[in-house]
Image (cartoon, rainbow, N blue to C red):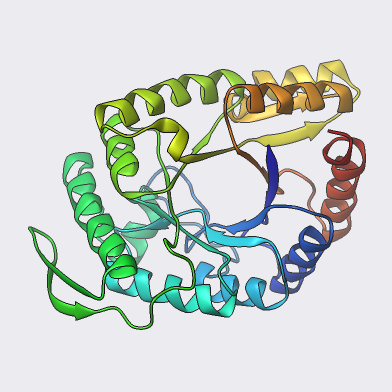
Length: 302
């Protein structure tokens, strides 16, 4: 199982680029970046906080690295027009010499849609729109000309120039919804989810069922999972994390325990584990030191 990193969109760009260089030099598989415009509150409440734009950061990450994949985790189709996303991805594919993954989602963060006047439709309509968008994007990435006439988009004889470096340029979709999974199985190359081992395993079973319903071999699709990682020798501290509000999206324990947990994800069939740095400290020095410790004591010993 490959290991990737996910720098927080709130940290300074120079730290993100240093972390990308570090990942590239230390054998990591990818560097991911979220596509949001403000911190999430889970409601319409609007809060301030430095938030760096995904599609400005990704080309910079590509430019300072040579080997890692670079991708959005994930870009909401509620915000971005499919033609814009496709063209961004192809351009980045050329900048990176074929290392881009276009991560997509239907959109979910309430406060950013509210603040910027972007409609966040009810779930069914949002997924309807997503299905049209990913259909168009897949065509724009693969075909010389795209025609599509739907409820939300009207695309007429749209050219796709230049073609991407990769064939196909991979689309990843982050989702846990059954219908979204079926759409992912049909149009995307990769599926992504959050979760501790229990959550991730349950969602993977639903993913396998969705592939089978779509007439797709699950083995033909790559799968990735992310969780907050807490490296600690303190059993009480690990228990507090796992019993806390993010417990179902976290793994915690000693180095040996984390190695075993990562092996269990791999045994469950996941191809990639993504390490967010969101919980690794409040300062650049803390984040750098904890990520290096995690690399030395866990990742490099697998």
